[in-house]
Length: 166
Image (cartoon, rainbow, N blue to C red; front, side):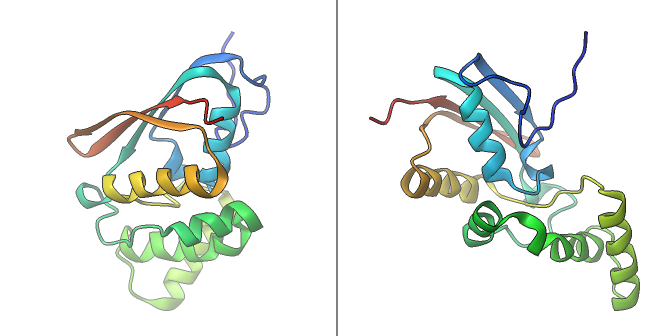
């Protein structure tokens, strides 16, 4: 039986029940990727592996967009992502859709929000994503141990281990 799970909450997956989690081109689609990673680590057993593959914005249709700052991601995590939805939708339409007319940007951005489209809400390069991991470890005590970091064409792969930080 196949089950579809919300990648941000992993609500039906019990705590510490998985040896590994694979999130292949998932985080950029989450409105609150820090919350998503928190839940990925929640479901991992001690020493479990989190495999992440993410598009590097420099080599995709996101090339014209700005890297999502840590401050932005932290606010999404602490306050919830509703405050940034309009900004993400407008950014997507302007830089990916290549629309310049402000009224058309707003119209299409509203359609994205109404349809709950899974655009790339957030974008990174490999460097900024590693910096995000270090912030999560320092500021929120995420149990992150980087096992591998690999460039792979248009994407980068990060293999993390759920570490005992005690």
